Length: 218
Image 1: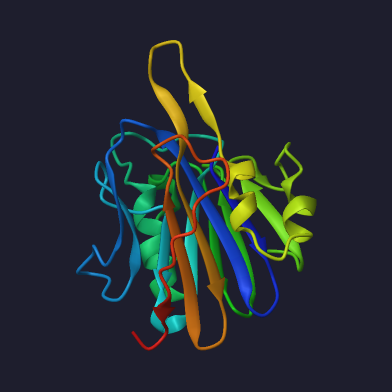
Image 2: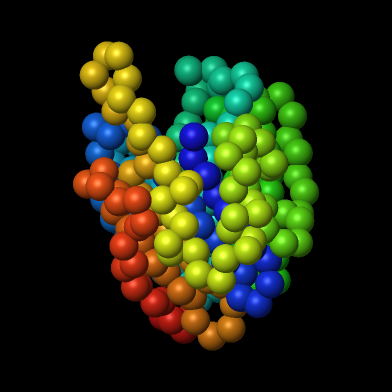
């Protein structure tokens, strides 16, 4: 279960925790996509896309979560990992044929607030992310059974809480499904705060802080 937590205000704060099979290859944040100049994010090396894209020059971020519903036809399916790249540049859900994508949730955030699009394979729902602190998981907005929203809402600094949003499951077939990374963003003002943590050591309870301030003017 991936997790995105958003707290509105000035600045807006967004935490994105990526959960995936541990043997799926990926690399950390960078400007990996020549077709999307200035966009920063971690890259999934299997499909080439990302789970969280940031465009510092616009003070904007787009985060993707897998959704639930009807899968796309495998003959025409394309990777959902391109959606954050396109959305962070466009400032909206890109104009695409949604039937080619498996179900997803897409969060687009900037200093003024955040929006959520949810596609279940049949229907698209769009709504603003409510004011305050909201948690989005694979089941959608408000479906988090861990009741993380009040915990994060009461905290001034989220760094010590990131471990509460992580998971680790050792499966019967020997594979591991776990939180592989956490990205903590602040959006607003003249600077994008970008803190990235690689969690593949599996030892972190409170995630170590890694400061990667990104200037809005590049």
